[in-house]
Length: 185
Image (cartoon, rainbow, N blue to C red):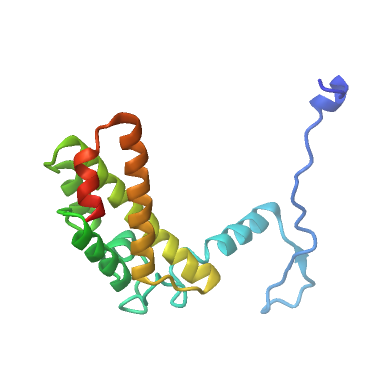
């Protein structure tokens, strides 16, 4: 196949990762260091990759976790931290956003039970999705770049994005004319 002989295709591929340069040694046991097994090496890589996500005290969302011993969870990140609350409030002030943002369950239920005309409902869903993305993006900026995005800046960027998207959709379908006036107000 593709320039390889049949025997080459049937050979088992070599493992891509060699753990030989990484040595393990028990400080309580005076034996010489031993190379890591593949399982130990993969566990080490997983642990290092997961470290920023699993809730170290210095790795918190845009505002510090209220109790330094809490592990960051979805409710805390998206609905309870001060930065997220401020963003949700700015979205409420801009668009008649009647979605409950107290926790994940209430947020989901209020989106499901939303009573608005179809166009307004779709804009509300877009705003909710953009806000969730903005919160996640701000968290990652803080953790990985040590750069804080201000709520006002993020609110402005999100508003511009939603307005542009709605204008484009309205230009194509002519179904969002009544929403555009509200968005631009």
